[in-house]
Length: 251
Length: 251
Image (cartoon, rainbow over all chains, first blue to last red; front, side, top):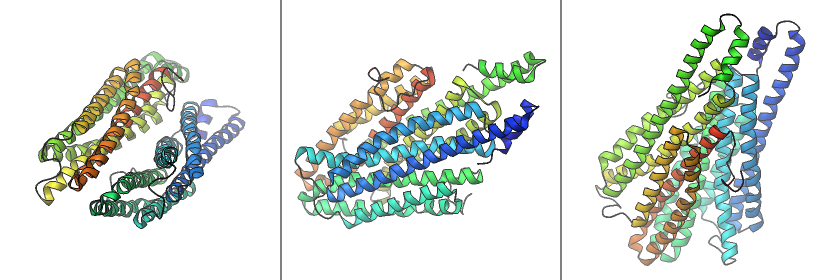
C-alpha cells in the first residue's frame, strides 16, 4: 500500500529530523497494513475451508469435517473482532488518507462478509452434526442432487476467485467474478424449481427437498458475499463505489 | 457526540487563534456527525417501513405496498453509498479519535446491516409482485399462518426497538433487544417444524410451505441484523465489542 500521503503529513508536523522519523513511521505503518492484509487473507482462506468442509460434510455425512467447520467458526469469529479492533487502532494512530484509508474501510467491510460466510458454512455443518446426534443418519446419505453439487462448486469457485482478486488486488478478475453471481442466482432459482417438483412428486421427498433448499439458500448467500468482496476490490483499486451498478454498463 | 479529543488535537497543531478555529471546526464537525446520525436514522426508518410494507403485502397481496418496498429499496441503496462516502470523507478530513471514531466505524457497519434488511424486505415484495405478474393470484390469498404473522410481529418489534436504542444511544435497551433474537430464532425453528408437517400432511400445501419457509428465513435474518445494530450500540457507548458473547454472562 502507498503510504506517501502519510509520509508527507508526518514530515509537515514533525519538522526536523523527519527523515528518520518518517522512515520508522512509514515502515511501522506499512507493516501494520501488511499485517492487516495478511490476517484478512488468512480469515478468507479459513472461511473458504469452512465452506469446502461444510459441503463435503453434507455430501458424505462426514461428522469430522462438520465438527471442524464449527471449530474454525470460533477462529473466524475471533479474527472478526481482532481485525476490527486493529483497523480502528490503525485509523486512530495513523490518521490515514486516500488509498490507505480506503483499504482500512474495505477491511472493515470485508471482515463482516467473511464472518457471515463462516456463519452460513456453520449452519450447514450444524445440520450434519444435529442429524448425527439425533439418529445417526440423515438426509444426505447417498448422492447429493447434481444440481446442489453444481451450485456448491460454482459458489466455491466464486469465493476462491474473489479472495484471489483481493489478494492480488486484481480489479479485472474482481469484475468478472462479481458478474458470475448472476449465474449463481440463476442456478439457485433453477434448483428451487427442481426441489419444488421433487417434493410434489412424492411426499417422502419433502424432508430432503426442505433441507436441500435451506442449504442452497446458504450457498446463494455465500455467492452474494463473494460478490461484495469483489465490489470492495474495485473500490479499493479504482476508488469507485460500484455497488448497485453493473460493471461495464453503469460505472 | 463528544469532539473534545479533536478540539485538543486541533489546538495543539494550530497554536494561535485556536479558540476561533476550534469553535468553527468543532461546530462544523459536530454538524457533520449530527447529519450522519440523522441520515442513518432516516435509512433505518426506511428499512423499517420496507419490512412493514413487505409483510403487509404478503399477508394481503397488496401489490401497491409491494411496489413501494421496491421503490424504497432504491432510496436505501442510494443512502448506503452516500453514507459510506460521507463516513470516509469525515474520517479523512477530521481524523477522529475515541468515541467519534467509534461512531464512524459503527456507522459503516450499520449501513451494511440496514441495506441487507432492505434486501430481505425486497425479496418478500418481489414474491408478491411476481405472483401478480404471472397469474394475478398467489400463495397468500387468505389468512397467513398465525405462526408466520407472529414471527413477523416479533421481528418488526425487534427492529423498531433496535433503531430506538441507536437513536437514543440506549445501551440497556440495546442489550435487551439483542437478547430477544434468541426468541426470534426459536420461533423460526418452531415455524420450520410446523411448515414441514403442513407439507407432509397434504401435497397441496407444499407450495405454500415452501414459500412461507423462504419468507420466514428472511425474517429470521432481519432479526440477526437487528441484533447486530444492538451490538454496535453497546460498542459505541461502552467501547466494548460484545459480538460472539452473551450480555451479562461473558462481557
